[in-house]
Length: 219
Ligand code: GMP
Image (cartoon, rainbow, N blue to C red; front, side, top):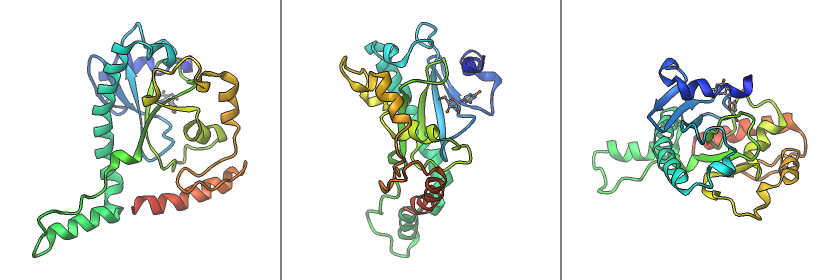
């Protein structure tokens, strides 16, 4: 069953050196096989009593949630340094830092350079398509050949994407509601960067994302 495809990484992380970024007894960090942005990782909890649960239930356990937050913090650091390798060479703020560093008379305090943690988002789909608990760590650009369907975009750019910070979800949080979440997937497209609306015009959205990607790289 393809909905169970993530289990094999959880059970045998050492068998997948190309997909597995790192692992320990608590979690496995893998590359999404169909990345929806420049960098798209999945953090998989290994605890057999949690990994099959719906995120809502799993994260109701405060001890588990605290452990996951720590693992996420470490994963985000790795993700940010990988994004820095990929995008850093295009970044205006990184170039300004290097120029200052290499000048004959370097200033006492250098310009900070780009903080790639701010380009990453961490969260969970309201209705996950895979059976095993997974947390998305994804760069916000949404620039990818694998982004092919309306729901690929909206599942990351509406309330269907629930930030890890929102957990535990309170009882009356509307993000728990199935109807509300199905409506999110069908919503008009909204650019993540400039907020421009694209109705249901997916090709126009894709063209626009390409333009935004160029500008975003150079920030
Ligand atoms: O939300 C589930 C995520 O799992 C999606 O972003 C999919 O692209 C990803 N995915 C689905 N199947 C596989 C797989 O077999 N391997 C990996 N690494 N990711 C997958």
